[in-house]
Structure formats: structure tokens, C-alpha cells
Length: 102
Image (cartoon, rainbow, N blue to C red; front, top):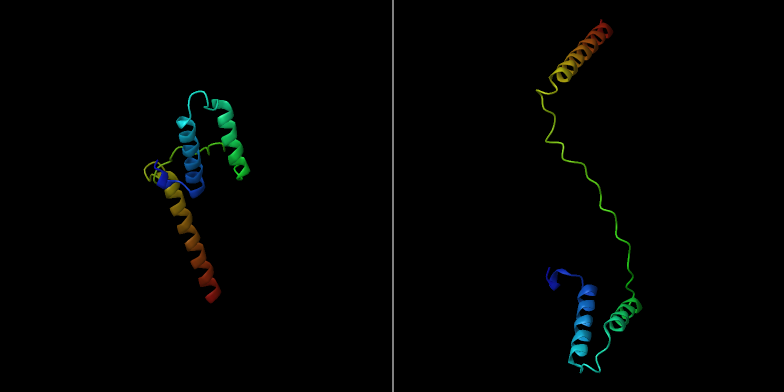
């Protein structure tokens, strides 16, 4: 991931940390801040600017892919029953319409 892919706030936080690290590295060994207080100071500065840690979200559970539709060979019986039901319903509607017109 490059820094250009990040939002402005993240780029600003990285730039601030790089600046602080360079200042710390330039100091003599005797004047160099201890690691833990240095990190604490940086996190407190982020919090003063409004940064707040958030709990991680649980990953969404997705079921496995189920294919690309019904397999006519696998569902031939159901398909034939549905065709028969449609034909019967169509015949019934035609009969009712003929009776109303008579």
C-alpha cells in the first residue's frame, strides 16, 4: 500500500510520526527518549487531535457459492410438475372464460 492510497488524516499521522522519529534518531543516545514514553506521547497527541480506537468488526460470514442457477437435469421432476400445473391452470382459465362468454 502506498501513502497515496490513504486518506489525508492517515497521511498526516504518518508524517507526524516520521517527523518525531527523525528528531528522536538525531538526538544523542543520552538525550534520546525511552521508547515507551515516546510511543505514549505520540498516541496521546493523536487522541488530542480526535483519533479514537474502535473495536474490530467481526468478519461477515458468507456461505459458499451455490452455482449459477438450477440444473434442469437435477430438477426435472419438479420442472415437469410445474409445467403440468401451469397447463392445468391455463386450461381452467380458458374454460371459465368460455363459460362466462356463453
